[in-house]
Length: 391
Image (cartoon, rainbow, N blue to C red; front, side, top):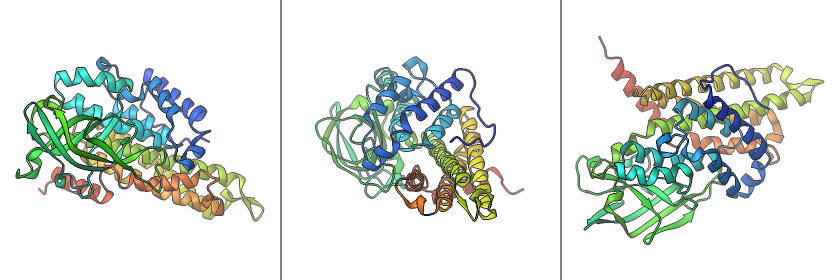
């Protein structure tokens, strides 16, 4: 069941046709197998091949490099559509697109020409390797080092919770080229790091939700990488290159939250009209109506905040506050709607035979990924004060 929460779509022409094609694909190929694959934590190889054919691995890559060149607004709507059914598969291409964004936005002409066509086609797939066992939100606390050795760098350290870590073959790798630099961010650099000798996958990490996409520990032991893999060719720019992609990353997580909020609302709306108690459908009971009213409002507000941030991003304007607002609100909407939908389902909502339990397990990740919601509120407050100085 699709729930219509208002006319908020921004796409037209080719973008609208793509979104319609993605929606048909989700209903035809994804929905019938999601429960089986999610419960088995099975990697959906055949869906990955279909996503390649649709060009999703180049969704935000410029057409000159073989990508679709989608705006953030269209991309966000695509993520919403897919996440309403199965959030996990959006992570397979989104983490990959963060790697492509770093190369396209900050890479040298040679790096763009070499890597972007392969990334856009899905020939090379990967992600973003930032998090370490002792460094998540505090990126400046990473310990992985890269030491210059002639025309190579030698890298040592460990990354964790890396999406596509097993199935991917190349990653944007954040390291410290000058561990003693002060302030710390000046010693950080970002590399294009393909798998090879010295680069191993430590283990697959088991998760509550977000199944069927591999999250892994990556271990680097004297991993040698050519110096021309340093993104932009200049040391000390890694922190800015990484945070420069966080606005789009947070818009993406917000879009996932919108999708889950919509999906949970759709399931609750459908169930409430067929489940009867005391001689009538439960949607006619005021207690259920109160829940549905709140859920519908949250879902729509989350969508509007996300599309607002995406529009500002597409205009090339700074949107860290708006992206933070969207990520914060939409992820909380996903969590609240999944819980309320589970309650509306009653005991059935706690059963693995019903889809709501998957949304309930997936939703919490959106409150953590791309910066915790506690951090988002701090970012929002700081930017709000900066933009509204006292007279």
